[in-house]
Structures are given as C-alpha cells and as structure tokens.
Image 1 (cartoon, rainbow, N blue to C red):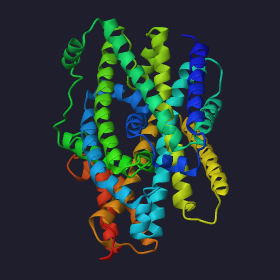
Image 2 (image 1 turned 180 degrees about the vertical axis):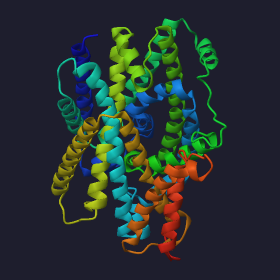
Image 3 (image 1 turned 180 degrees about the horizontal axis):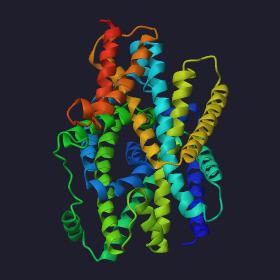
Length: 486
C-alpha cells in the first residue's frame, strides 16, 4: 500500500482528535487540566484507560512474545487483576478521603515535604523513561513502514507527533484526554479485532479450531511451573499484582484520570470495569499472536518478535486492513503519550513548583506556568526519543523499561510505610538515600540471583522486593508518631 495514502489517514485521524480537543476544552481552566473538574464520566475513564495501560508496546510486542513463550504473559495479567482490586479498595478510598489533586499529596500530609518531593521526582523520572521508550518503539514502526519511503527524517517525524500531542492537550488536559483516550481505545480495539478476523478468514479457521490449532502448536500454554525460572507462575502473578499497584495505583498519570471521577463509588466502578476489560483485551492480543505465527508459518515468513505484526498487517493484508492497523497503532501510541505528558506537567506544577498551594498566583499566571512546563516536557520527550534512536538497539528499550519500573519500588515503600504503620519520617536527606539505595541493591540482587541462589532467577517480583527494601530502610530511619494519618 502507498505510504502517502496511509499518511493521509494518519492526518485525518489527527484532525478528528483536534476536533474532540477543541470541543472538550471550551471554557477549560486549570482545574480542567489537572483533574477534569472532578466531573469525568466513570465509564469513559474506564474504557479510555485500556488504551493508556496497553500502549503501542503491548499492541506490537505482546503478540510477538507468543512465538517464544506462548500465553505465559497471561500469568502477569492475572496478577494485574489482583493489583487493580487492591487499588480500588485500598488506595482510591485514601485519595478520595484526602481530596488530593496529585496523589503524592498523601506523602506531603503523611510525611512532609522531603518524602513528598522524593516520591514525585521518582514518578517524573520513571514516567519520562517509560513514556519516551514506548513512543520510540511506535514512532520507529511508523518511520520504517511509512515515512522512510516518503524521505521524511526520523527527527521530523518525532517533532510532528509531539507537536500533535501538544496541540490537543495543552488547553483541556485531563478533561480532554478522557474523551480522546476513549476514541483512541475504540480505534485500537477495532484494529485488534479486524486483524484477528482477517487472519482467521484467510486461514479458513473458526474460533474453536483456532484454539485447537494454537494448542497443538503449544502456543496456549500459560503456567510455568519451573520454580527457578524468572517466569514461574507465582512470581509472575505476585509481580503482576504489585506492578499494577506501583505502575497504576501509585502513578499520577493513571490515578489523575481516576480521581477526576466525581465520587469514590464511581471511581471504584471505573477501576473494576477497566480491569475486567483489560483481562479480555490482553487475551485477545495473545490470541492474535498465535494467529500471526500460524499465518507466518503458512506463508513461510521468518520474521518474529516485534516486527511480525507490522510486517503481516502492512505487507500481507488488504489495504483496508492495513489502514485499520495503522490507525490502531497510532491509537495505541497517543494515549500512552498524551496522558504521560499531562500527568508530568500536573505533577511538576503541583508537587515540585507548588502551584496549587501558592495562593498569590492568579489563574492567568498559573496557566502561563503550566503551559511553559508542558512545552518543556515535550522538548525533554523529543530529546529522549532521539537518544534512543541514536543508540538504535531494541534491547536498550527493554532495559530502559525495566529500569523505569525500579523507580516505583521507592514509591511502593513510601506508601506502605504510610498506610500500614504510624511511623513518621525525618525531614532530612536520609529518606532520599534510602529511596536511591533500595533500587541499587535490587539491581545487584537481580544481576547475581542465579549465581547466589542456585539458579534462581528473579522476575517481576523484583518490584515487591524493591518496595520491601525501601520499606525496611525507611522503617530504620523513622520515628514513632501516634498522631499519623491513617
């Protein structure tokens, strides 16, 4: 299919996003940007969060993993479901009780400024790394399959995409992305379902026969019972639960949307509805992965991993399906980027600059500062993506994403200490030292676990270990405080 033709559809899609942004940002103010005026519809938030949580990495990478590990990723998804229930019934009541704009305000009220700003900075670092890594992977697919053929340089592609995101988020913020994420999730799921249908039709498979075929080829195996393996099922489930708690429940980007719902009950409905859809959608991505490998075998296609889905969608499917794939791909790209950019702006303005606490600033001055920060983060995104391109190694992206998850361990430890104890933390650098040392110790432990523990490999449970080490360190430097907020 002509790259120019595909590019036209990308532009049309973006114009639709701009239209939605214009409509939803009318009469928007700073409250609209930060928390959507606490008036978001819980059903829209739940559905839109699917696109944000899955991202372009899931859209491309999860199907690609089936060839090497079958449906093993579903072990993590089961853990994710448990984690989302913990968020709904432990963290959300806490956030609504305190009426926070930034979830890290809990740390301010519970422990003071040092812990508060430490938590916010760990979120900012993690989200920058994670969001730009995801953006790079998807932009690279668009570059290779469309824009290289149009002789458009990578830097210009990146600049244009970030400019698009800026244009539809800088005014409405959360109020806008609740609606745009819903639209983008619809498009992403449409791309997923259409591709599944087309491949099944091409192979003349029914749904039942497809499952039989995938089972015969050992693609449907879920549970790994090898205790020493990093993908042992209990490690994956426990790790998946705490990944959800850390990367959703303690993440300003995703919680910013949840606390924009008017009531706690509505927000809990949102989380439980979202988690149910999340499980089904992830199963469909794994199902698609099995179909892709089956289709590739029938056509003697030797490509595997992340490149498999884009190659088949753009080179072996009809033009209409290729268009839907591209729209689904960019729909997976934008929710993970626009939400991250908005959340980073909110967290920096509220948690680091203290805009919401500075009553001397006018609405106009606050807005000017917010827009400036928003643009600066977009520039940081651009620079990080260009660094990834310069490194030009997909394994580096995996490393960056892993390193990004390390930063949620200190957040997990801080929140655990606040929720489960009545201890208080000192207003000095010892808190920062503990939060830095814990991830470093985790890296050393993970790198040497097989040698130290008779072949035992640490998997996703590393986040929990990180949190517990942080918790233990903070407990050592803390003091008893019988008046702490529960």
